[in-house]
Image 1 (cartoon, one colour):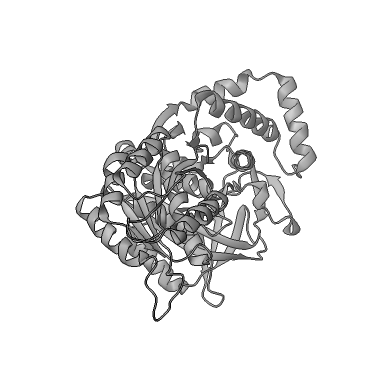
Image 2 (cartoon, rainbow, N blue to C red):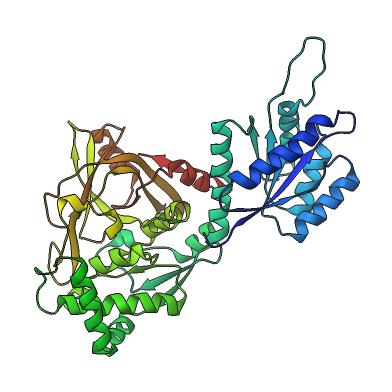
Length: 448
């Protein structure tokens, strides 16, 4: 992610409570937060907040550093005034973190009472309509770490989506109604803006490239992949398109893009499947077939894991193995290829007219996802699975994924839900983090 989440860290206590435990939590929990939360820049308020004077000093510190979220750890019981005061003045979400009581002795007092306090403060924040979250448990607990990581990562993604530029190379292919999109709804929901570059600009730039650059790129490609099956002229078109798209994305300032990859590109024998795969490994994400909503999922997935996404169809199921087959024309990034099964750069697997990788894809945990606009409301469709060793049995790029839902039930659920046909797949389990983003954006989640 380009922008870190600015997290304000503070430990609170009321005046009547002993200070030894709060001071300990100020040190230890502050160190833990700095060392364990990804995509964050932590601003630690240096002393306990107890009085209104302390609170005002903390507010000034947080506002000066433009914190995006406040992580409030209860050193000991704290009244509603501190949490509500921070919410009013800082105007950002607050995480109320209640560690467990550290010791229990029959004849001794409570030293924190943090859980009760979080419930009380949280109830007051609800009445103020102030966004907040309650986390219960100690920093040593894996569940707590996961909850906090998911939450801060989700807020970091949302911060990075604001002002994000999605570039359009053309609109959508003929008759692909599900690849149409509502620019205003996306901007309102995700904070993403759109700009467009006509395909003619791409074609003209391809034609204008010096032959020396094209020849050098053709040599690089031939040195890495078997291109002997490509028809005459296709490798040259591949090289020209690769060089032009890479430069245009940078020149136009696009953070992510989509492309109308047929019929015009095919008519010029430059269908871009293999080009898109190569660019994905270089951090240049472009969703094929002009599919914006699949691209939205790919953007969020990439922000979490930093890996390329595979935009794909679900084309087959195996009831006995309870697997689904994800396949597409050949746009999978080389880092996803199963080299052991053989990889070739060939013509488009269905209609020719370009370059595509014919290969199976690697094994490992995967998250398949798609944001879909239905009646003006986005939904997140989510499928968790495990990519299993796969042998390619048709042209193009493919992988079999074992899932938990019975696959016949899965197909029925997809049909009833109105989900479109493209998925974005990444080779990492980021499902819970995506759910966290969806919740913050008020997007319903459909687990497939």
